[in-house]
Image 1 (spheres, rainbow, N blue to C red):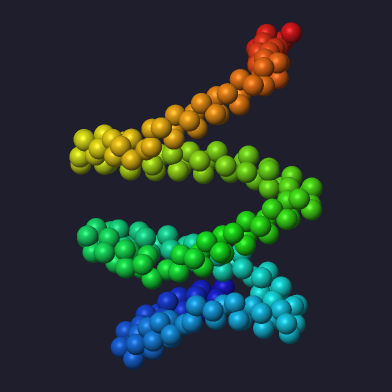
Image 2: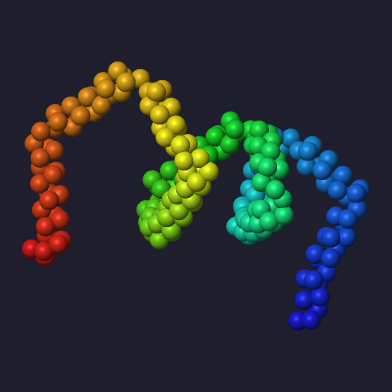
Length: 216
């Protein structure tokens, strides 16, 4: 037990010693900046074309890697927030965002969304598991996002009480009212054209609520 603890303690010490060397820092910087955008695609194509078992073995360790990356990013955010001024962080993150290939990000999101859709359609078990996870974790994630957005809005309002009013006013000024009026009328008429279908749906909804509330 003592030996294991000593080894675990030695790893950060070794990393700290390496990072104190300007040569090591320059090598890391050069290596990271020289990575080509298509290197990941080429690596996956090579692995799939050679021995898929190796690729699936690597994929099996992805959750461990993701957990490590999330922990590192969490700690990075905390340290950046506590140790550096907001203006510096703002300009730094802005420059990082400009370097990200947005088209590649959209393509990646679309590819994974299509894969997830295929899996949901072909596997009832996977669909049931996904729905259960969504119902379990979804409310907490949604509430967290709403709370974060609320704090963001409240912060803007404290700093500039008229900011939201100007934002909404700008949106309204930019809306083509004639087109919006036509679209609203078309949507309303589409619902009203259903006549009995809409009435039946409304009546079924009312009956369901009555039964649920009064047990009849």
